[in-house]
Length: 146
Image 1 (cartoon, helix red, strand yellow):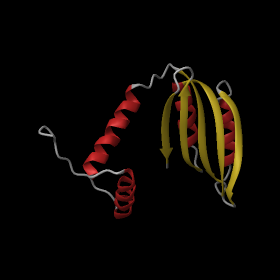
Image 2 (tube, one colour; image 1 turned 180 degrees about the vertical axis):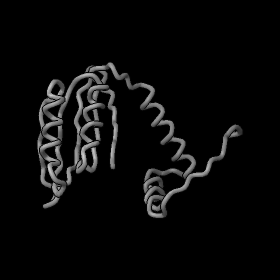
Image 3 (spheres, one colour; image 1 turned 60 degrees about the vertical axis):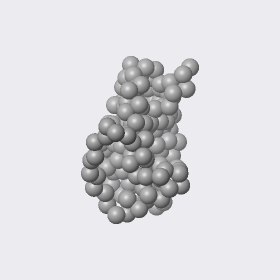
């Protein structure tokens, strides 16, 4: 690796510790090697996403039940995106939160808008979209969090 540029990265101690443990389990010999793979994966993921491509997606949404009107706003979002919305299943996480598993299909850009609108609601703590391209079986993953 004659032609490399060094960069500095600042991480919280807990995050660095978790990262070190994860890369050790995967057999990386250095942080640099692991970070290079993460950057390559991210660039590759973004390069082959076509916003106009038809996809089928699953959104995992974590909702804080203690926030006033959060469920009304989430359900209104589902109705607003009815053209791509297929189904939802709710699972209680604990007394203060629940997880919705949402299935939708349509153009990737529409699913991205759906999850972006959903995660902008106060009380929606996390949202993650995983989608496939029918016929190609490419998996796309978009994670959003507050």
